Amino acid sequence: MNDAWLDEVCWDEQGLVPAIAQDIHTGRIMMFAWMNRESLKLTVEEQRAIYWSRSRKRLWRKGEESGHIQRLHELRLDCDGDVVLLMIEQLGGIACHTGRESCFFRKLDQDGEWQVTDEVLKSPDAIYAGKVSHE
Image (cartoon, rainbow, N blue to C red; front, side, top):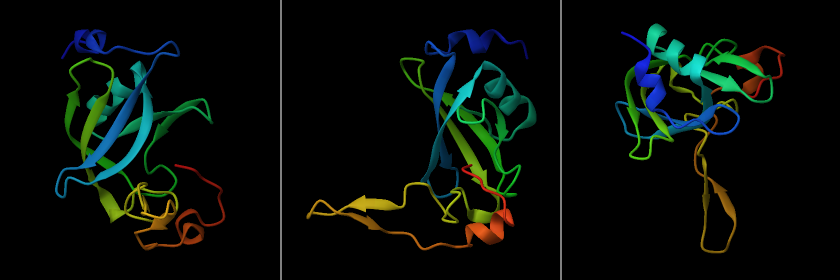
């Protein structure tokens, strides 16, 4: 496969594109992150989610610290070419660094309060064994 497909992505001024990870089995949105050209290319080559960490300013292989790898099943590009969708299998069932299945675990109620909707499946302390991480 040549790299011409990467030229169809509309990268922002920092050379990034928003990336949404969606569970291939349940359809649930697991997380949002950023990708640069290298991380998107490697994601396809390695068939696992590799993002660009803006805070660490480096490639971030999802699960490199937690073990919660995202196996890529399908990659999609939106109509404007400025968002990618990764259809993934979430190994270990946890995508969020808080130990929850999804990063989207808070829902706004009618009183204007954020309600936590998902339980912690595994303590972040147990996941990271003393390491501080914001995967």
